[in-house]
Image (cartoon, rainbow, N blue to C red; front, side, top):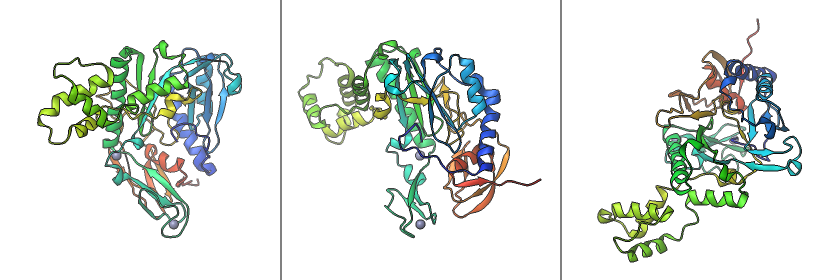
Length: 378
Ligand SMILES: [Zn+2]
Ligand SMILES: [Zn+2]
């Protein structure tokens, strides 16, 4: 659940599990609130949070940064959100808030990228008998007819691909839109992707349609057909002007490879586009009333930190955002596919069993409602 969806349904958690999760998050926040990036104008932002096992609470407003941080520590919720928009009256209903502008944002999720590693870690499973299989998921469990759910894993390969797409967005912004690099902040989302936040004021007043055009541009989705592009490249004099934007990107890519390329020009053009486009989630960029996970807070599904990245090269998404303790906890796991954290494999747990896990690894199983903390009496 990367963001707030209309269909958000709270996972049912028993009291012991809910209390354990809240304590684990609070233990982090107790020392970690200095890493939370509350905007400099908190009074103009809408805040929201999701308590463990509960539904979304939004339209909150705080006068100061300290007030916001105190509430986050007090609630130690599953997720904390803040609007990228500024409002006159952030606590009022959407149509009475008085929208004043919003920073431009991008979201890249590994789930949306066509990497082959997915066959190894994405699957469907039956909520009833825990049979599982490769995606696409069947309508009902092939074994018992029960309801099925999807599990999307992650690995170094798809997280690297997501990072690569995030860097492509930075490339588009700096070279095609003239944004200064220091006005773009890159974040790890806390789960399977990256967020970009653009603090260049020229984007702030843009409406949904204009933001949609920017998203489509970086996705390369408004381009002419490959066939058309190929035939205009054929007509292009070899020393012709490079052009700008996508034209420059495509002619540059094709120019470097055309000589020895074994396939058709049309195929090379298609390669030029797929290797340079950034598959951002357009619906995130165009939503000007969104509340967005606050940087420096823990992800509600994974317990990993939404983390600001200073150096993309040195950032390790398997290691750096894992901030919860490694204190062991006994978990009665119902079912859970294999997953990786801190470059270590956990599971798969294919039948009910009680296992001891480091706290940071237990969170994903517990938040999904596929395991419970074993309460030891005395
Ligand atoms: Zn089944
Ligand atoms: Zn992967």
